[in-house]
Length: 425
Image (cartoon, rainbow, N blue to C red; front, side, top):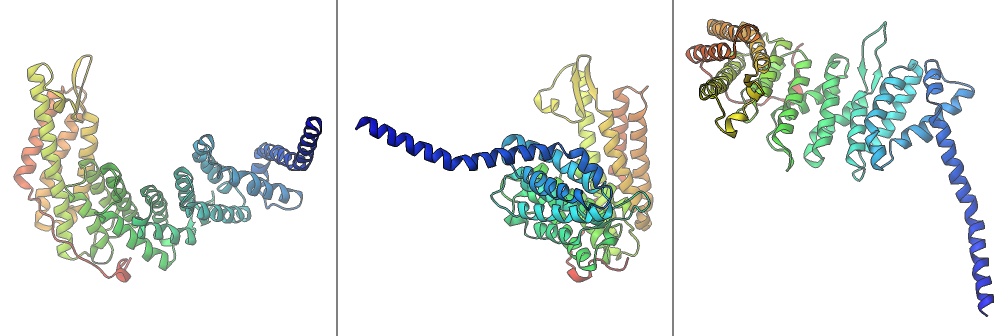
């Protein structure tokens, strides 16, 4: 009986193996085929430079439909780590470098893949993030050597705008990726359709001024989101109806909850915008915003300069609070003042001052005084023969002059009809 039982078990195992063998063989064959497709990279890159037809068509379809996009959907750690490189290759080695007819096909494939993955709430974060970045990089018309004009993909723009509009229901990293794409789209703002222009403008204004973020969103990420939206707004190049775009940037410049580096960068954005024909109240708000920043920068740099002088006077450290200053650090030779960082921030402030000076009216002279004081501090910092204490002296002198002439006060907020945001360009 025992022999018969063993024989019966062996027979069952044999039958099971025979039944499973075709499936195993098919899986192994499929894996071999995928490996072979992966080796066709160079051939595919060569073929897509012309319209794909004939025998190349099957390879083209299999390479992207069976290998490339499915590989980007693998969830193991190694595959997720390769997503950024595969995204760059998809765009730079395939889509951007392809013949226009092939670009259209690949754009459709990429859009279909990215929109599906991007919307999959259970997909890993790196996969959704990369999918959203791909959406923002797709165009209806790509730049060429002879024609640099670009038309962003309209349906991708619609999707990215919805992300920002409904950002409270989505992970912050999705909003970040969407803003990267929208900032790119605003570089070609005139090429967008009228509906896309309006929707883009509305959500960017919302993002630049948002106060409520998802729990766990750090201050640096919050500041980045606001600045990215402001940068996209500045790409449009106009102040907007009644100066609504310039006003949004100015509010970021004056925001006391945003770090000074972000505020200074926002001030510099104003030089990329045409600031003519704004209502006097808005013009005053924009000018006042930059003067407000000048006061904040002066106070911050004066404090750092005075701490540095005190450190030098004591010939040693004053404790961890002072050592954390972003304007000086200790090395093997002693304390060193961060001149490059100082000069960079002051250059941004100077560009903001220059941008709003035509709006200042009778206040233009005070802006010139501030601008001159800032330039003197920059020159002193950049002159290598000056010692660090020369730089701190110039910083304190700059701060004194700004204190004397700058009255920093932001104006109130206003709301605009969303349909009229763009105004007359």
